[in-house]
Image (cartoon, rainbow, N blue to C red; front, side):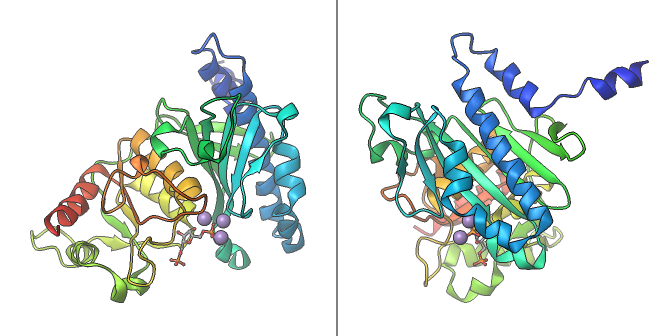
Length: 319
Ligand code: AHG
Ligand code: MN
Ligand code: MN
Ligand code: MN
């Protein structure tokens, strides 16, 4: 009988988000509806990606799927990697949330079937009566929620609304995301480093020294393994579960690195901190960055607490 109960007592993401909402009796449920709409968007992309119908994917980047479906009376501003300007929802239809998102991360990997993903973060507008671009340029430490969906061997959605990190796996037969990774905590130290070594010639000294320590440890510890998939969502998901460090450092060619602050650096940094890890830009805590432009980039080092401490020491001593 016990087994029977477990099988039907599934914790779906819908139930999970509603349970979270019940912790805020005064809430109107808008946030829950917004999150559930984002979940529907991820299911849609998961279905299109698994069919690998390239024509369908191109459709995804268009106005219809992402903007049309998502613009309920919830969003106020939408910021997408694929749209140059912020999308302001018409005042009559405006809610109080800002959604920043990378609809398809790791897009260079689509053609060869390697895992790709969607990344998102949610802010609240500062003043519903007076909404401006400033509302979309808030520091990451103002984010209310962040998450990603990884379209890989399984479709996994990892989410935090500020009370820890939880992972859900899509059961295609139910069309539901089931809680499979409750309360994810990143190992304090890892055995993996993840970086595009092809840029090594252009790295600064602290990054060069850190990678050297990973490959030729001086303290007798074993060398770390290098794992680099080239999709941030997949590299970060492995780092979150196995521990270690993911880096996209600055280099001579790109002094601000490559990853975009609003919809790649902030959501992944938020999740890392919620899971007991850290996220550092080479100069400061990543979530304390204040972006000046929507698609501004920043160097990023994120992952296991102790591993990030090491990179922080190297940057501190290089001053
Ligand atoms: P996107 O496909 O959204 O533009 O992001 C690609 C990013 C990120 O997914 C990944 O970590 C990084 O590009 C890989 O860059 P390199 O190929 O330069 O290593
Ligand atoms: Mn991306
Ligand atoms: Mn992208
Ligand atoms: Mn891109």
